[in-house]
Amino acid sequence: MNGDLFSLAGQTALITGGGSGIGRAIAGGLARAGARVLLAGRREDRLREALGELDGDVFAGDVATQDGIAALAEWALSQNSPPDILVNAAGINLRQPADELTPEGWDQTLDINLKAPFFLAQALVPEMRGRGWGRIINIASLQSARAFENGLAYGASKGGVAQLTRAMAEAWSRYGINANALAPGFFPTELTGAVFADRKRADALAAQTAIGRNGQLSDLVGPAVFLASAASDYVTGQVLYVDGGFTAK
Image 1 (cartoon, rainbow, N blue to C red):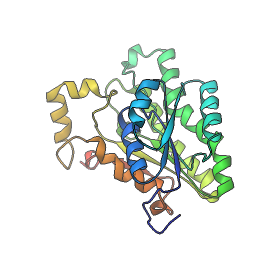
Image 2: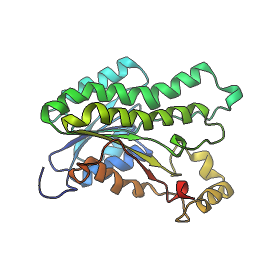
Image 3: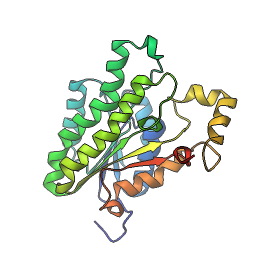
Image 4: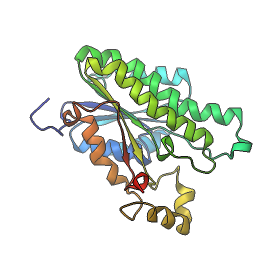
């Protein structure tokens, strides 16, 4: 690592869900800090659009299946510079009411939001451990700590992400691999399109924050670079709420 605590020069970051929303914003921020970025997602056209002129490559696949996770890990590890940083940003929220939640919806939500982050990290950790350095950044949620309407499966998955992050830290931090999570508040993404389409609802959520506004995707960049860099060498097993103070009120 060089003398700049926040520099990611010479690092490679793999970002799932990198074609849109939170994953795309974080990928751009890590790239501007100097990292080579590997963007993974289901839609190759969106991934290539997100990559643009950034230094990196894309992989179109589905982390909802074990085969898809294995294929992504194999591709990432075959790079000249395998990932030093893993950002698990792929996610889904079906918003099924509790009385209508199906086994298929439950499985799909937990497979993408909770199972994929662990098994992808498990596949990449041996390479990181061999170098004695790595960063895992999971994406938690306000629903890691709070219940919201029609969010039973999503909330269960994101509560699991918070505990998964602590367990990853316990398992791997002794090898120089820190694991932390970002827990965004309300940000405009594909998953929150219905929320932001309702101006009254979006304004009410903004009023619940200490800052007085909902998030902008750029608000996630600084925290992500911090957790990906040497600046967070003594930070592991933590969930950082980037929510404008929503959980403080």
